[in-house]
Length: 159
Image (cartoon, rainbow, N blue to C red):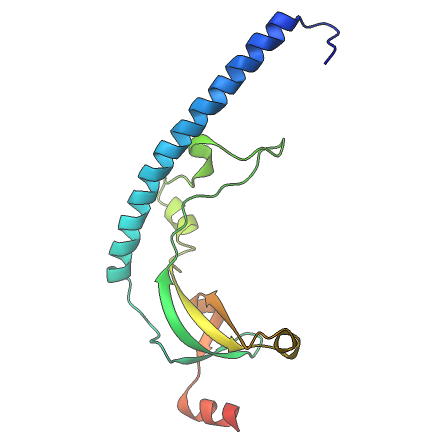
């Protein structure tokens, strides 16, 4: 690299300091990432017990686009890591990679306004998917994305 104005000594020292900084930031991110992950896992376990399950396994549901599926499971979705990239397309580091909880309204962002329990819904695969050997798809959906089918609807769907 041929420099026009900066001295080679400056660039060498600057590069060394930036590399040092990156390494220390990576170590900090790893340490705090483990701590935060542990906190989130504990809260998810607590929420798993506290947030009621509205739809049991085996419940038949219909989505807004009239796809009929069966609930095969449920889980708490609590994602505090937002990731992302800077304006220079570098991955976000430090506390900026997590959603803040500084004000009461921040909880609504993290919990999608209270939609924190998702349901795994199994759907029959479409014709194109079946051509590729895929017989079913399982998708995580929130309760505002489907409605429960009642008994007579299930019978008419099968006929």
